[in-house]
Image: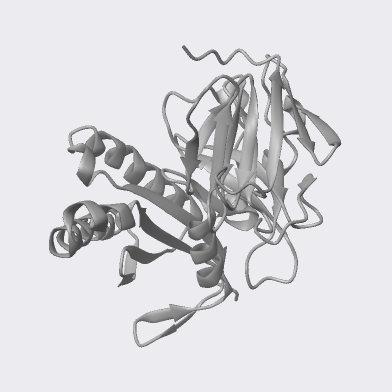
Length: 309
């Protein structure tokens, strides 16, 4: 009989900046305290902590629904804790979830699901939970969460792209803009009553995507919807989602993404972070706008109800 285990890998986003701000000793103490809190959270939801890895924690669960519920509860609780933390100490948590067979040796565990969960954790943004389709289907009607389809994406070390999902855990999310859970997750698409479009321009080529075509991936990979053939661009460098009637850009890269809006003298730097795209502007991939030869993509948003001011 095949026994499937759900693997959770959670790590801390923002620890590098913390070391720069607080120094090694104080930052190490803060990171250790948070990884211990993550471990206790996993154990309190009937998971087993396999090991701690620097600023990360590897845990396993007997069922996918329990794993998804545990990670959602953990991020909800951490969001409340962050509100009470001074700014220099704030660190986000990101999570990868994968289901499959594992091999346990001397208290440690190995297998494809372990590797994939770690890779998804690397690719997810702060406060995000990324999961494989197998984990989502096994989770079924996990309480108080929704699943958003991210699309087919490359996973480092895997020969073929895989369908991935984001677990939406925030209570203020609009359920009608998200993919429903359970067995229907593969058949349904995100729905939003407000339609919009985003146009990209790159070296004289224009590409326009409607909101119902999101997510849109930008990168060097040939299957990315917006393929940018430049070695400084990651294979899947960034993702554009349609969320709450606006386009959200999330950096997925190794070296970062820069955004500047028309009429603004400054830019926004993203490193596994996200920002809302509005109006028109430019996106620099892999290097900042200071490099005159930076791979830069122009964008123009239409039909969004996202107003900033």
